[in-house]
Length: 435
Image (cartoon, one colour):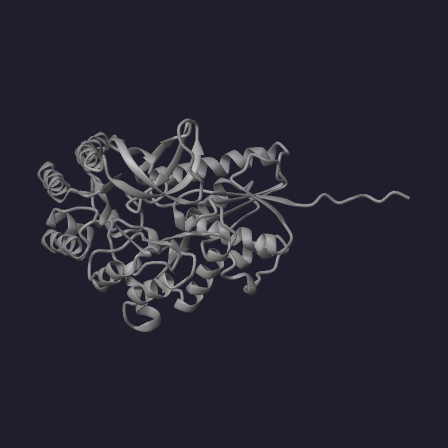
């Protein structure tokens, strides 16, 4: 007598949005694999269950998330998949609306509802897997989320609505996870949170990012530790002491400033002035002369005048940041800024973003050309087309400059460091050859 073989469930996890969502997806995948599911990530492979991890940060991100859900809802209706689940920030914020608008989804879950999502799949939440994260990035680097949520009061930001208040992870737990990652070949950790510099205030009643950095720098195998998303107000300056004394801490700081005009900063509720920002940046450069500072700016905030925008442009020219990105203001309901009139036209926002990036392109080109002839330590991420592609200590994956080495002439090992002499430079790329 023949018996029918039940087809094993296969899950495709689709990740949208920022690196914090990547970590959430990695934790989800770890739990599913621990429950003997076959799991793929952002894959074209056939899978009968799809989980979309959404972003709800700004209009463009929300649109991408909704379109992705609709795409897989259509696939489900056509019989291409059996189950469709949605999680993440968009689901956290707009769950009720989404349930009505896209009922084809089997269930929606918020940012902190991983156990509930697993239960819907008849899977157990395994506490013993905490810290044993499966990574979706190349094996030599990984993101390490040190805290969840945010206690800041920025008037434009909906993150606290989607992620809740700030909750730090204990140092011991983070060290254990870093050790696990290092054993699997990770050499670079990108520390992420909604706000790094607040770390420890809830757990230890004081800012403990410097102590965490010291502990992580002691983890054998970790050679680079990179700081992302640091808030400038009340910045714990002991960080620079650790950066100066521990070679594992990259001379790199991602510190979103958002604006430089005091009136706009006040309307944004950023709790810092232009003068205080300048003093902090100058102090950082005095303590770490070769520090690379990445920042982001927000243009088109309600009431932003041409004069206020010019003030921001002049600030960028004066400060000469190593890396800079620009967002256009998105009018988010339930934020404090939503009570203000979104009075900067879309075309003006776009024009200002382009003008600011043109200023930064000139700065970036000058800074890159100054590196021609220098020898830099480069970590190689991949081979793509005719080049091996890597990054210097001044560059984080996806968002920063890259170093290209022609594969026809030279060989470097992906996942390893190499000394590279820079021979050419463009606005966002360096070209070089192994020393």
